[in-house]
Image 1: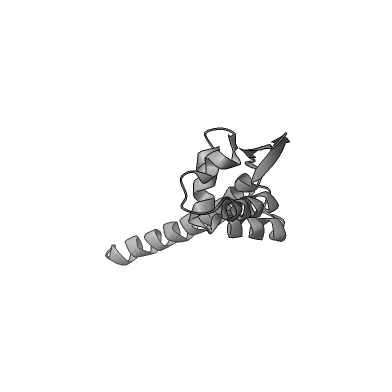
Image 2: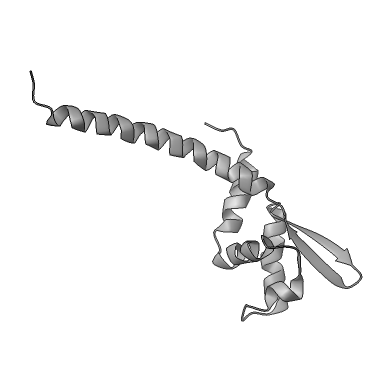
Length: 113
C-alpha cells in the first residue's frame, strides 16, 4: 500500500467531502480566481465562502495570494495526487481480488475431465 501522511490524507478527504469545496476546486482547476469571483455562484455570504476556503487552505489544496485588498486563490494539486495514489493502491488490490474470483468462477463452470 502507498505510504501517506495520515493527517494530511484525512484533511484532504475531509475537505473533499463537501460539494461546495469540490465545486470551488473544479472552478480553480481552470485558473486562479479572486475570492469574490469564487463566491458568485453560491447563495451564501462571503464569510461562509471564506470558511470553505480556509478548510481547503488548511488541507493544502489551495494557495492564497494577497495583492492589496484582492485575495487570489490558486489550486495546489499535491494533496490530490497523494489521495489519488492512496486510492490507486486499493484499486489494484480489488482488481487482483476480482481477477481471482473470475478465475474461480470459470473453474466452477468448467466440467471436470
